[in-house]
Length: 204
Ligand code: IMP
Image (cartoon, rainbow, N blue to C red; front, top):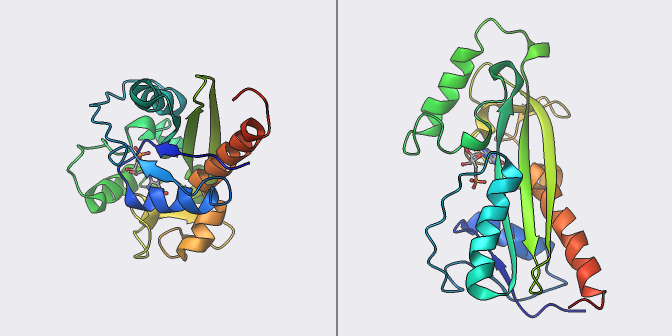
Protein backbone atom coordinates (compact mmCIF):
# COMPACT_ATOMS: atom_id res chain seq x y z
CA UNK A 1 0.00 0.00 0.00
CA UNK A 2 1.51 3.33 -1.09
CA UNK A 3 0.98 6.56 0.83
CA UNK A 4 0.22 9.54 -1.38
CA UNK A 5 2.04 12.25 0.54
CA UNK A 6 4.16 12.65 3.70
CA UNK A 7 5.34 15.95 5.16
CA UNK A 8 8.56 15.88 7.18
CA UNK A 9 8.59 18.80 9.62
CA UNK A 10 12.19 19.88 9.05
CA UNK A 11 14.18 22.36 7.04
CA UNK A 12 17.27 20.16 7.04
CA UNK A 13 18.27 18.72 3.62
CA UNK A 14 20.27 15.79 5.07
CA UNK A 15 17.30 14.71 7.18
CA UNK A 16 15.07 14.93 4.08
CA UNK A 17 17.29 12.57 2.08
CA UNK A 18 17.58 10.13 4.99
CA UNK A 19 13.79 9.89 5.46
CA UNK A 20 13.21 9.60 1.68
CA UNK A 21 15.62 6.67 1.59
CA UNK A 22 14.07 4.91 4.62
CA UNK A 23 10.47 5.31 3.41
CA UNK A 24 11.18 4.89 -0.31
CA UNK A 25 8.92 1.87 -0.82
CA UNK A 26 5.93 3.47 0.98
CA UNK A 27 5.87 6.91 -0.49
CA UNK A 28 7.64 8.69 -3.33
CA UNK A 29 6.26 12.09 -2.40
CA UNK A 30 7.93 13.09 0.87
CA UNK A 31 8.12 16.86 1.15
CA UNK A 32 9.54 19.35 3.63
CA UNK A 33 7.50 21.84 5.63
CA UNK A 34 8.58 24.59 3.27
CA UNK A 35 7.59 22.58 0.19
CA UNK A 36 4.20 22.02 1.85
CA UNK A 37 3.84 25.81 2.19
CA UNK A 38 3.82 25.70 5.99
CA UNK A 39 5.21 28.86 7.52
CA UNK A 40 4.76 28.16 11.20
CA UNK A 41 7.06 29.79 13.73
CA UNK A 42 7.15 26.79 16.04
CA UNK A 43 8.26 27.31 19.65
CA UNK A 44 9.85 24.09 20.88
CA UNK A 45 9.19 24.59 24.58
CA UNK A 46 8.69 20.95 25.59
CA UNK A 47 10.68 19.36 28.40
CA UNK A 48 11.56 16.16 26.54
CA UNK A 49 12.63 15.17 23.02
CA UNK A 50 9.24 13.47 22.62
CA UNK A 51 7.29 16.60 23.58
CA UNK A 52 9.29 18.76 21.19
CA UNK A 53 8.84 16.30 18.32
CA UNK A 54 5.07 16.30 18.95
CA UNK A 55 4.90 20.10 19.17
CA UNK A 56 6.45 20.35 15.68
CA UNK A 57 4.33 17.59 14.16
CA UNK A 58 1.07 18.97 15.63
CA UNK A 59 1.76 22.47 14.30
CA UNK A 60 2.26 21.14 10.76
CA UNK A 61 -0.65 18.66 10.99
CA UNK A 62 -3.02 21.47 12.08
CA UNK A 63 -2.19 23.41 8.93
CA UNK A 64 -2.22 20.50 6.48
CA UNK A 65 -4.17 17.49 7.80
CA UNK A 66 -1.63 15.28 6.01
CA UNK A 67 0.56 12.49 7.33
CA UNK A 68 3.28 14.41 9.20
CA UNK A 69 6.61 13.20 10.61
CA UNK A 70 8.97 15.23 12.81
CA UNK A 71 12.01 14.56 14.91
CA UNK A 72 13.92 16.10 17.78
CA UNK A 73 17.37 15.00 18.82
CA UNK A 74 20.37 15.79 20.97
CA UNK A 75 23.34 14.62 22.99
CA UNK A 76 23.12 13.54 26.65
CA UNK A 77 26.38 13.46 28.62
CA UNK A 78 26.01 11.51 31.88
CA UNK A 79 28.79 13.30 33.79
CA UNK A 80 27.06 16.61 32.97
CA UNK A 81 23.71 15.47 34.34
CA UNK A 82 22.36 14.82 30.83
CA UNK A 83 23.41 18.19 29.34
CA UNK A 84 23.15 19.52 26.70
CA UNK A 85 20.10 17.27 26.12
CA UNK A 86 17.09 19.02 24.59
CA UNK A 87 19.19 22.20 24.50
CA UNK A 88 21.85 20.63 22.20
CA UNK A 89 21.48 23.10 19.35
CA UNK A 90 20.98 26.05 21.74
CA UNK A 91 23.91 25.06 24.04
CA UNK A 92 26.17 28.14 24.55
CA UNK A 93 23.95 29.98 22.06
CA UNK A 94 22.48 28.93 18.71
CA UNK A 95 25.17 30.82 16.75
CA UNK A 96 28.17 29.49 18.68
CA UNK A 97 30.32 27.18 16.53
CA UNK A 98 30.41 23.47 17.28
CA UNK A 99 34.17 23.73 17.64
CA UNK A 100 33.59 25.97 20.67
CA UNK A 101 30.72 23.85 22.03
CA UNK A 102 32.77 20.65 21.65
CA UNK A 103 35.86 22.21 23.27
CA UNK A 104 33.67 23.36 26.16
CA UNK A 105 32.25 19.89 26.78
CA UNK A 106 35.74 18.36 26.74
CA UNK A 107 36.93 21.02 29.21
CA UNK A 108 34.02 20.34 31.54
CA UNK A 109 34.97 16.66 31.54
CA UNK A 110 38.61 17.31 32.45
CA UNK A 111 39.90 14.65 34.87
CA UNK A 112 36.90 12.37 34.26
CA UNK A 113 37.99 8.82 33.34
CA UNK A 114 36.76 6.83 30.32
CA UNK A 115 34.19 4.78 32.22
CA UNK A 116 32.43 7.96 33.42
CA UNK A 117 32.46 9.69 30.03
CA UNK A 118 29.37 7.81 28.83
CA UNK A 119 26.97 9.68 26.56
CA UNK A 120 24.25 9.02 24.05
CA UNK A 121 22.61 10.57 21.04
CA UNK A 122 18.83 10.47 21.39
CA UNK A 123 16.20 11.02 18.71
CA UNK A 124 12.44 11.11 19.25
CA UNK A 125 10.32 10.94 16.12
CA UNK A 126 6.61 11.71 16.03
CA UNK A 127 4.14 10.73 13.36
CA UNK A 128 0.59 12.08 13.06
CA UNK A 129 -1.70 10.34 10.61
CA UNK A 130 -4.34 12.20 8.55
CA UNK A 131 -7.02 10.91 10.98
CA UNK A 132 -5.20 12.67 13.86
CA UNK A 133 -3.82 9.61 15.65
CA UNK A 134 -0.32 10.11 17.03
CA UNK A 135 2.70 7.88 17.68
CA UNK A 136 6.06 8.82 19.18
CA UNK A 137 9.13 6.59 19.07
CA UNK A 138 12.71 6.92 20.32
CA UNK A 139 16.08 5.81 18.95
CA UNK A 140 19.32 5.87 20.95
CA UNK A 141 23.01 5.46 20.08
CA UNK A 142 25.29 4.85 23.09
CA UNK A 143 28.91 6.00 23.21
CA UNK A 144 31.31 8.19 25.17
CA UNK A 145 32.97 11.58 24.95
CA UNK A 146 36.59 11.66 23.74
CA UNK A 147 39.47 13.89 24.86
CA UNK A 148 39.84 15.80 21.58
CA UNK A 149 37.86 16.51 18.42
CA UNK A 150 38.46 13.97 15.66
CA UNK A 151 37.14 13.49 12.11
CA UNK A 152 35.57 15.67 9.45
CA UNK A 153 32.34 13.82 8.63
CA UNK A 154 28.92 14.40 10.13
CA UNK A 155 28.03 17.56 12.03
CA UNK A 156 27.41 18.99 15.49
CA UNK A 157 28.84 16.88 18.30
CA UNK A 158 30.07 14.05 16.04
CA UNK A 159 33.81 14.92 16.43
CA UNK A 160 33.72 14.22 20.19
CA UNK A 161 31.33 11.24 20.23
CA UNK A 162 33.17 7.90 20.25
CA UNK A 163 31.30 4.80 19.09
CA UNK A 164 32.82 1.94 21.16
CA UNK A 165 32.23 -0.64 18.41
CA UNK A 166 34.89 1.12 16.28
CA UNK A 167 36.78 3.18 18.90
CA UNK A 168 36.29 6.07 16.47
CA UNK A 169 34.19 9.21 16.61
CA UNK A 170 31.05 9.34 14.47
CA UNK A 171 32.83 12.12 12.55
CA UNK A 172 35.54 9.61 11.57
CA UNK A 173 33.06 7.03 10.24
CA UNK A 174 31.43 6.98 6.79
CA UNK A 175 27.82 8.26 6.73
CA UNK A 176 26.39 4.78 5.89
CA UNK A 177 28.07 3.28 8.96
CA UNK A 178 26.79 6.04 11.24
CA UNK A 179 23.26 6.06 9.74
CA UNK A 180 22.85 2.30 10.12
CA UNK A 181 23.48 2.63 13.88
CA UNK A 182 22.35 6.17 14.59
CA UNK A 183 19.63 7.36 16.95
CA UNK A 184 17.87 9.04 14.02
CA UNK A 185 18.14 5.97 11.77
CA UNK A 186 16.63 3.81 14.53
CA UNK A 187 13.82 6.28 15.27
CA UNK A 188 12.98 6.72 11.58
CA UNK A 189 12.92 2.96 11.02
CA UNK A 190 10.52 2.68 13.99
CA UNK A 191 8.36 5.38 12.32
CA UNK A 192 8.48 3.28 9.17
CA UNK A 193 7.07 0.32 11.14
CA UNK A 194 4.22 2.52 12.45
CA UNK A 195 3.42 3.74 8.94
CA UNK A 196 3.48 0.16 7.66
CA UNK A 197 0.89 -0.84 10.30
CA UNK A 198 -1.23 2.19 9.38
CA UNK A 199 -0.98 1.54 5.65
CA UNK A 200 -2.16 -2.05 6.17
CA UNK A 201 -5.02 -1.15 8.54
CA UNK A 202 -8.57 -0.02 7.80
CA UNK A 203 -8.41 3.14 9.91
CA UNK A 204 -7.31 5.47 7.10
P1 IMP B 1 17.53 18.92 15.92
O1 IMP B 1 16.93 17.60 16.23
O2 IMP B 1 17.63 19.18 14.46
O3 IMP B 1 16.91 20.02 16.72
O4 IMP B 1 19.05 18.84 16.37
C1 IMP B 1 19.45 18.89 17.69
C2 IMP B 1 20.93 19.08 17.87
O5 IMP B 1 21.44 17.89 18.46
C3 IMP B 1 21.78 19.29 16.65
O6 IMP B 1 21.84 20.62 16.28
C4 IMP B 1 23.13 18.79 17.16
O7 IMP B 1 23.69 19.75 18.00
C5 IMP B 1 22.74 17.62 18.03
N1 IMP B 1 22.71 16.37 17.25
C6 IMP B 1 21.62 15.63 16.95
N2 IMP B 1 21.96 14.54 16.23
C7 IMP B 1 23.29 14.62 16.05
C8 IMP B 1 24.22 13.79 15.34
O8 IMP B 1 23.89 12.77 14.72
N3 IMP B 1 25.50 14.21 15.38
C9 IMP B 1 25.91 15.33 16.03
N4 IMP B 1 25.10 16.14 16.67
C10 IMP B 1 23.78 15.79 16.70
